[in-house]
Image 1 (cartoon, rainbow, N blue to C red):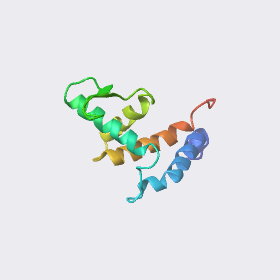
Image 2 (spheres, rainbow, N blue to C red):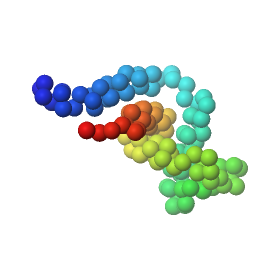
Image 3 (cartoon, rainbow, N blue to C red):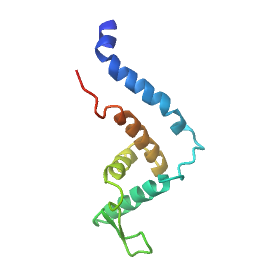
Image 4 (cartoon, rainbow, N blue to C red):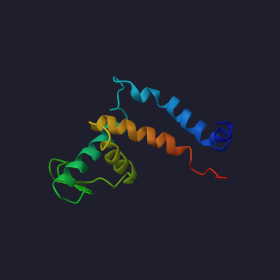
Length: 116
């Protein structure tokens, strides 16, 4: 057990710190509609509807009074794809957004980290 901890202690510390930081994401009354939260949820929901209808998911025809809107103008597609992937494991898009936020917190620690 000690050899396992010594070998993977860096990853265990990252996982535990990400879980600790993400505790507010588990709150039921967490207000996710501030800043760009509602925009990311709306992009993911509209992309989901476009995929269900067999349309191009980068041009969302049901936004902007049905004139359409290209969702990758200001944000990259990774956040929307991550929310759509998280939707496979949750029941609502709000929970998918929270799960994608947790993945973002977890993965952000590995950015520019030298691996041994």
